[in-house]
Structure formats: C-alpha cells, structure tokens
Amino acid sequence: MPAVQPLLGRLRPWVFVMTAALGSISAHAALFGDDEARRAILELRQLRTQDREAHAALSAQVDQLRRSLLEMNAQVEQLRADLARQRGQEEVLLRDVAELQRRLKDAQAAQEERLRQLEPQTVAVDGKTFKVTPDEKRVFEEALAHLRAADFAAGAAGLNKLLQTYPQTGYRESAWYWLGNAHYGLRAYKPAIQAFKQLADQAPDHARAPEALLSMGNCHLELKDNASARKVLEQLVKQYPQTEAAQAARDRLLTMPKGK
Image 1: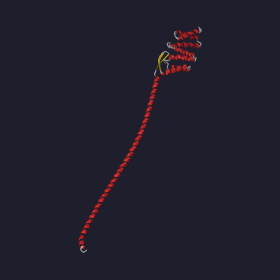
Image 2: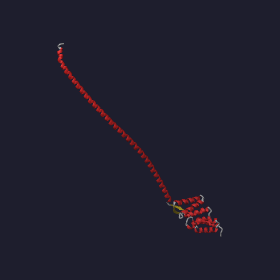
Image 3: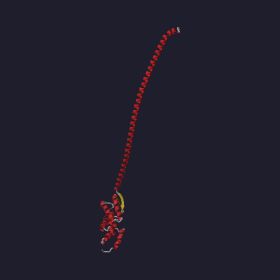
Image 4: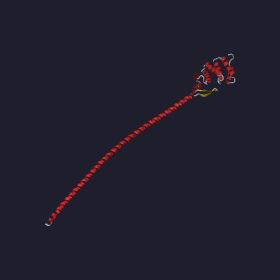
C-alpha cells in the first residue's frame, strides 16, 4: 500500500487534466448538437411555414379555380338559355314566315281568280261567236237555267239584268229571244211581242230571227189579234221562206180565218 500512494499521487494531475479535457469535449459536443438541432428546428419551421404558405396559395388558387368554374358554368347555362330562347324565337319566326307565305299564296291565288273572272271569254251562241266577261256569261247561263226549270219570272229578271248591265253584250240578240219566251211563259204577251220585235227589227240576220217572228204571231193570236198575227206570219214566210219557222207559219196561216 505504501508503494501505491506515491503512484496515485503522480497520476492524480493527469486524471484531473483528462477529466477536464473530457468535460470540455463533452461540453463542446453538447454545444455543437444544440446548434444543429436549432438549425434543424428552424429549417423545419421554415419549411412548415413555406408549406403552409404554399398550401394557402394552392387553396387560394383552388378557390379561384372553383369560382372560375362556377362562373363558367353560369355562363354556359346562360348561353344555353340564350340559345334556347333564340331557337324559340327562330321557331316563332319560321312559323310567322310560313304563315306569311301561306297568306301571300292565298292572296295571289285570290288575285289570279279575280283576274281570271275579269278576263273576257270567247263563247258561241246561236251561231254567233263573241267575247264576254265571266259575269256576263254567268248571268246569261243562270237565266237560261231558270227558263229550263220553268221559272219564267226568275229567267226574265236575269235577262233584264243582263241587258241593263251590259247593253252591248254579245248575248243581246239571244237575250231578247229568250226574254220574249220568258214573258210568253208568264202569259205577258205584249212584253213578249216587244222583245221578239227588237230581235226581228235590229238583227234580221240572226239565227233566231225567224223563230222570233213566229213567236210574235203566236202572241198576237193569244191576244185574239188575228190581223196582226197574219201580218207577222206572212212577213216570216216572205223574209225567210226556206226556214222551218216559215213552214210552221204557212201551216198556221192555213188554219186562220181569212179577213180577221
């Protein structure tokens, strides 16, 4: 033991130095580790801050994008609504145009019909060819239809209307003849004689002139005016000797009392 004490005495300074050195190294190491940790923490905090900022910026961009999408959707819906409205307006316009075209077509057809009714037509009656308006033709044909149905009053009214409305009508001679027949059917013999006489005097070359004279003679006979009847029948035989009316007049003259 006495030998150990001196040795411990010599080692004690070295132990102290070593202990101090180790303590210094430990403190330095501890100090170095704290700085690195701080820097790491600071960097981490900075990264987290940057991350939050980036996240916030991204969120803002996303929100902006959402708003933009919503606005775009609203615009799309508005465009769809506008398009639907325009299509509706186009459909209405197309219907209006179609209706206008139909009306124009109807108006054109009506105008053409009116013009057609006003255009003269060529007709042939009693061997005479001439032009008449559609209204002239209608009135004349309606009057004859009444006569064929034995409606003498309506027939006479129609023929008088024709002669008054169209005094120069090509139907004039035929109208006189049939007017005389209408009055004869009504037993109005004097107006009948007047109508037949107009034809015989003003159109002696007309195909109905011989028949008109024969009918005049018959009217005078109905009125018991044998003298006038004989005079007219003799005129007929002399003026149109080769006609059937002249032969009928001869036969009638043979049965009539002479001098009356």
